[in-house]
Length: 72
Length: 416
Image (cartoon, rainbow over all chains, first blue to last red; front, side, top):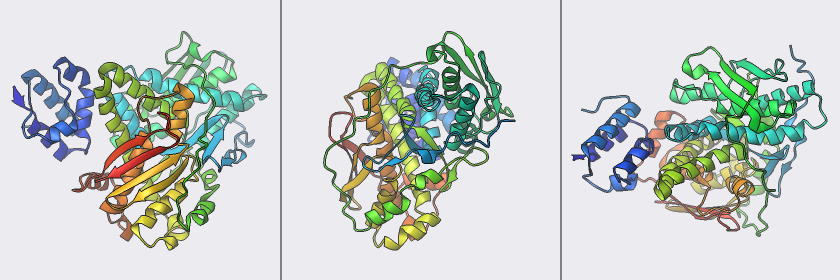
C-alpha cells in the first residue's frame, strides 16, 4: 500500500485546478475494480490516503500524462 | 463556385422571445457558448475513454440539426437547401462548409475552417483523435434532410483533423447501417408560468433594452467564425449541447451510480466556470460594456446586476437575484435553457441538470469578488484562470431547485 495524497498534491500544484477530478474520471473503471470511491473532497480533507500498489502506479501514470512531467 | 449571393438563412428572421428570454430557429432553441466552455465539455467527455461517446457526440448534433433543417428547408429545392445549410453553419460560427459535391450517395467534404479544430488547438494544443464531431453530425443531418434519407441509416465519420496535424478536416458521409445514436421525437417546450421575481434594479430595463436584438449581430465572419469579447462564440442548438451533458452523465451513472455522476458533474460545472471567467470577463471589459453598462455601476453588486441585465437578452432564460453579498448569492432562472432541453428530450429528472449556468454564475462571483476586474485588471489568460481558481476563498456551488426536477424555477447558491 502506498500513500497517494502527495502525488495528487504534486499534480494539482503543477497543472490545471481540476486535474485531480480528471485523473479520477479517467480511471473510474480501475477505481471501481479496487473498490475505491475517492473524491476530491476526501482527498483534500485527509493527510494520508493509502491505495494498492498497482492502483498507485496507474494513478501515477495518468497524473504524469496529464501534467506532462515526471513525479519523483 | 456556389452562388452565395442569395441569402437563404438570415438570423434576423427569427424574433427573440422576450417573455421567455429565448430564441427559436427552425423549432430549435438557440444559445451562445464560448470555445472555452464547449471544448472543456468535450474534453471531459472524451476523457472517459471507457464510454462510447462518439455515438452521442455525433448523434446529438445530427438530431438537433436534422429537426432544424427539416423545418427550414421545407419547400426548397436541393440546391437551395444546400445553400441554406452552408449559410446557417457559417452564421452560427462553426466555420465553412461547401456542400456542392453532396449527392444521392453522400459527401466527402474537406474544409480548413473549423471552429472546433481551431479552438481546440488554441486551448489544448494538438489531439490524437479528430475533434469536430459536431460537423460530422451536421453533415449527416444535412444529407438526411436534403436527400430524404433516414437519419439512422447514415454512416458519418471525420477521417482527418487539423488538430491531428492534417492540413484540412475531412468528413465522409454515406448511406449505410448507421454509426451514431438517433433519438425519439422530442416533446414541445414547456415554459414556466410562475410569476417572475424581477431583478429589482433601476437600470435593468435600460441595459436590457440596449442589448435586446444585439444577439443578431453575432454572426460568423468570412471564415465562419465568431470572435467576440476575447473568445470565439458559437450559436448552439441548445438540445445538441445539453444532450452532450445529459448523455455523458447518464453513461457515468450507468457505470458508477451517484459516484460516477459526481465525478462527471464536477467537470461539467468547471466547463461553465471557465465560460463565466472568460466570456463574462470579456463582456465586462468590452467597449460595449464601457459605454452602455459601466456608467450605471456604483458597487461590485451592480456589476453582477449589470451582467445579468445583459445576458437576459441572450436566450438563456430570465435570470434574477434573490440574495447577493460577497459571501453568498442566490441566483434564480425562469426557463433555464438546460432544464427546458431536458424536459423536451427526457421528461423529468431525479437530479439537477443546470451545470453550465451554475458554473457560469460561480465564475461570475469569482470574477467580481476574487479578482480586480472591477478596477480594470485584464484577466483573460489561462494563467489568470488558474490563479483565480487557486484563490484562498473559493466559492462552493449548490443547485437546490431545478425545473427538470419539478420546481417552477431553478436556484443556484454560490457561497464561501
